[in-house]
Image (cartoon, rainbow, N blue to C red):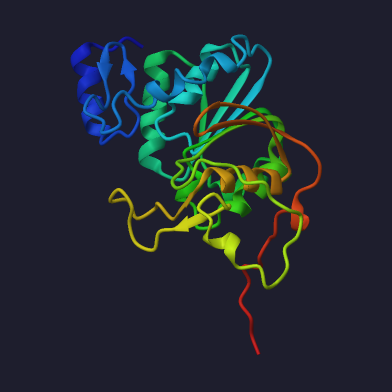
Length: 253
């Protein structure tokens, strides 16, 4: 379906505000983004590390937002791309963006905690810019590892604190205190209220913590093409038995 420049502008405005700045037939969705031309500026730093031809591959985009990465995967020939998000406003943006881009992409309202309901694995899982928005970040990684990561996971998280990687031992004595004061020790910073005026920014890891969490969830880091981006493959069993499934039932005396 053809849309005029004015029609696209009206739809963009009606669906806003947008977090992804996207070029929809020459009309930008968020030209004044505080991060610049985001996520394109991020994408350009690691795009060459992804196969240019994804013919026959299946892709799951977790926390797809307005669908920027979903569209890029479809443009590389992926046979099936599924984008999930819990926010209906983002999904509406994603569906419109895919329509303008003429990309056949499926979008569903689904939380990362519910990926088991998909009952399938994917060749490529995108988990970009989601971890720090979660109350239970390690559980999310465990669930991805257990249910949907068939081969490659492309992961990205905002990071703060030290970028150094310490040499970690397998075990520490109970009376070892000093390592916790070291800035490079794996740390997951908790945000009780807001960060960047966003109440969903809950946890921000330093680099050592990001990499340790990925390993703990049963992923092997095979490439680190950009400061916040990791290419991972499922390798071995996750620590601690993997994902847990709390009961939602009520207790009665």
